[in-house]
Amino acid sequence: MYDSERAPLLRQVPIVQTTTAQPPEPPAQAEEIIVTPKPISPVAQKEMERRPRRRFYLWLTVGFLLVGAVALLLYRRYVTSPTPIEVPTAATDPVPKPVPTVPDSLSQTESAITEALPEPLPIATDTLGSGESLAQLARRHYHRTIDWVYIYIQNSAHLDDANHIPPGTILEIPDLAAFDLKEDSSEAVTEAREWAALILSGGFTSYTDQRPTLPSNK
Image 1 (cartoon, one colour):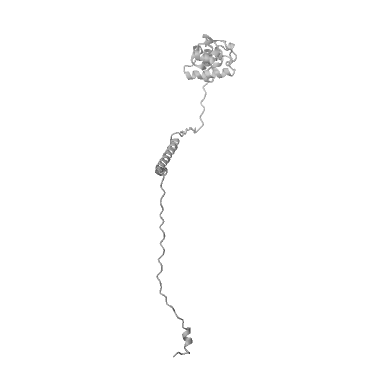
Image 2 (cartoon, rainbow, N blue to C red):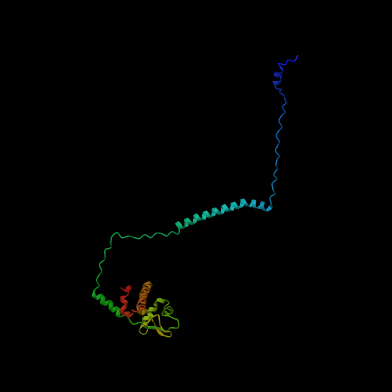
């Protein structure tokens, strides 16, 4: 027998439907990507083979340059460096030595020897050519150019300027033994240079009078 009072209660009870759980689908596998390497050209292959050799030669060159630079620095420091010159310093001022007085008899003897020098005699005559000088004549006859001063002294009576002598001038070539030159060749050259300075400055007047006044004869 249907109970009408319980009918609303029966209507309010929900009806639960049961469903069967299905297993989850497996994840989709990622597609495998295969990368195929590009073929290497013969030129690129040779370039790759040359790289190690280039690096080796490069480092070898750098090593040689470093060694050369170090050697150059050592050479400049220890070989080409000038040796300092030690300048002696005087502890005290030197005491001037007394100058000995020359007796009158010695001075008279020296002047007598100077006056007794014979007048230089010519050993030959020579004609000055065009473009020639007294130095060239001295080299020709004495084998030393500085001895031109003695040719000038021998011919000073008719010569004004030793550097301006007209071509065609006939000159006497004197014997150097008559000038009583010093035995030491360096001292003889020094005296000849003093004569040259005197002649070129226009101060020459007489050989016998001026020879004792030369710096090398004082």
